[in-house]
Length: 256
Length: 331
Image 1 (cartoon, helix red, strand yellow):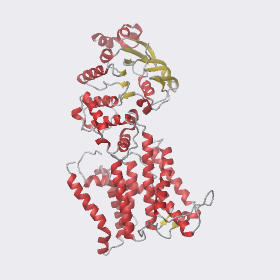
Image 2 (cartoon, one colour):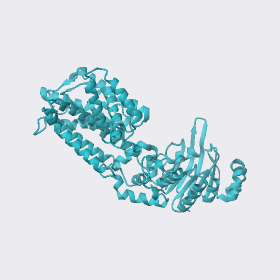
Image 3 (tube, chains in turn yellow, brown):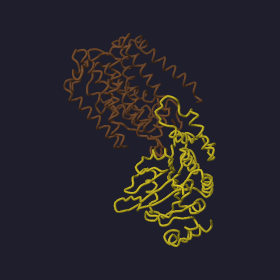
Image 4 (cartoon, helix red, strand yellow):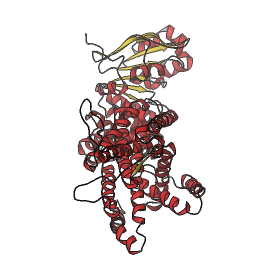
């Protein structure tokens, strides 16, 4: 059996009396699209923050690609291949789309104690950045400042920046947030194309997207994994239905 | 760049004017203006170094005078020992004073840079308002250190016998000193214009705009911010070395927090995050002071409304007004 790419063991994080992550276990296999769903307040945001290295867990450990990364800083995790996209678009508004991506390429290219040559004329940064933009259909907007892009384009760029770090695992925090139906469909298609190339941990409220994309779904309730399994198994799980999916979501799931 | 040629012509005119300045003011019978221009250039250097961290790094340091003053004191103290013939230390090995610019000025940069490294190491763990306050607090500590430094004059400061010595030149000549300062300032601004577009520069600017995302894409930003802070401190130390030479006097007044404030005003007035803005800001500030302080000691009454107007109506300061008005800010 292959080793999981990401393994979360007994993770725990409390804020005062509120236990946001409560002894969570979670695996993501190489190349797998693993969706994480759960009602508001289930602890998804806190989990993402711990996986990304923004907040430290109280207990438990996180292994990534065979190494313990529980205490590793955010940038060190990214360099090991754990990249994230943000729920609220987080870009460099004054930089162009191309420069946004080139900054991510540069992070891979070693230290930045280089003071002389202009970075934005360096083909070793710009060519990979162009390739990523082209792949996401953003190449027409390469020279536009990120702040002038539409919301949908900014969401695409958000993914492009994460991809440019050459991740082995993409931590996608609600990539469909605020997207209209058309852009959502486009995003699902894009993430589908990335399947197999990069593993994904997908946190998403859009049940259509989740059931279309996921190889496996984990349902998070009160900081614990209530259930974990294939989309069909999750759909059939009576406990999940009771705790989370409800009638509206069920109808959505059936439409898949 | 569509306006590359006009810019080049403008730069050529500026360079010619700066080079010809001592001769021109001499011909106009206003020789003392060479000294004023030197003073302006030195503060253009200091404000430019502050702009590296403030404008391009987003670090609002309210303690930049500490580095200026430290650089000044290094030159002052070395010169004091050299002129008195007293060694600075005899144990563990003898250290003599010096009046050589080639030794004293780099040492001033080194000392100010080292101080900036230590202050930055601690201050950069914080952000926003806390960063402003902690840099101010450190600068006040350094200020009171020099106030209580009795062997070197304490509150009264320390006079220098002469300016530093540079082989082949006489820095005692205001004209020659002007040209040395001009060369150093021009070099510093040229290097800065390279640095802000280098890999280091784009990481610094990216961290200014969105530090969290920078770390999320794999940049260990704090070390670059610390490097910028240290570099800015060292250059401010050089400015301090020059100002000590110009006035042939050092005192804790160089380190007073109002000095830090003045440098902030110069940067904001001239244009935060523009290469030449701080030079423009230093020029405007010091010339206003020169002109209006002759009329009233409350010359800030004139500066206040001007600063207000710039902050309210010109996003990129005076530089934004004269260079490319109406342009979307982008660097």
